[in-house]
Image 1 (cartoon, one colour):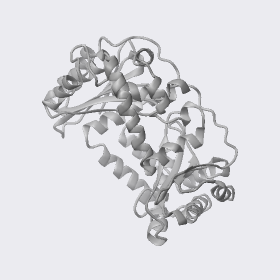
Image 2 (cartoon, helix red, strand yellow; image 1 turned 90 degrees about the vertical axis):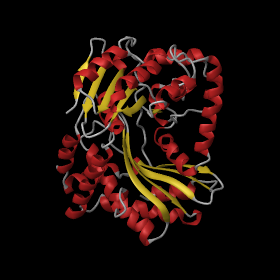
Image 3 (spheres, rainbow, N blue to C red; image 1 turned 135 degrees about the vertical axis):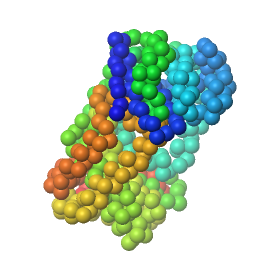
Length: 422
């Protein structure tokens, strides 16, 4: 069972002991992501994440920072999302204090050398180029844009090339001071560790964290009234698209119903869309439906890559399945299969210590509450056929429908016509 300790300064420490592993992970999560940025600094959360590895007061170069973990075979990395940024180190369990020392050092003591900032601009711009050169990846990154447009929820996490070129060192430092505070940080230690020792070590290494009230993010504006589409013309050998609907956020009572809906539609190899679009019609190599949820936004979307001449057919067939699941009750056996699939995949995904740290830490930071896997399984088990039908009727409506597409098309009218007929 996990334990949680909140210090007087607001820092939260989560420890998740797991004896059947030789590993331990230390994860520091900050409430800083693209939804906390304005248009002028879009991309700064991700830029800052890169800079935390460029040197600290104790280890002033990238080589010294990385070598410390490399010498013990540790795994380390960072990630940025819409709502948080995370820094972690995964080590053999006896080295957990070293991992805490390392994570706290980059989190609290990074110096952001000016020359490294200028070099990193090029690195991030190449990362943007890499994403834009892969239509399958780029199509999904356009999905928030078609849903939310010109507001933080609709902008890409990585930002724009124009912003990356102009963000200054003082901007990074100011943003860090505004968001990397005690009350806006969760430290999660998971793996083969002892609760009391882990909490004591976390207190020791993060005692110097700054105290301040973090800035709040802009409220998301929901104003869609009709189907929307975004078509990006590219000379590709295959068209890639995301087709789906606005859905439920993390606090909605039907958040797990939406997850089950996604699995039934296209979350497994025996799902409706995989069988129909790939196996029966041969329209796509990959077709997958996923459920996404943040604290203030949510969606259900199907991703696929299809022959350029068969896009309209593929979009139409997916929409047919959306309509069908909103009109007919799911058979009991199919519902049970989806629920068992969700629980089974979650159980398997939580085997590694780094996955455990993320599972518990992100819940605490974003939702300010933690549900164990068993508690989630109980909620999933309660989902009925009526629940699935009710949720499907609620989200699969024309005014929720969206399409983001990349392919050799200079106009979106024909796709918009298909959506309008939903």
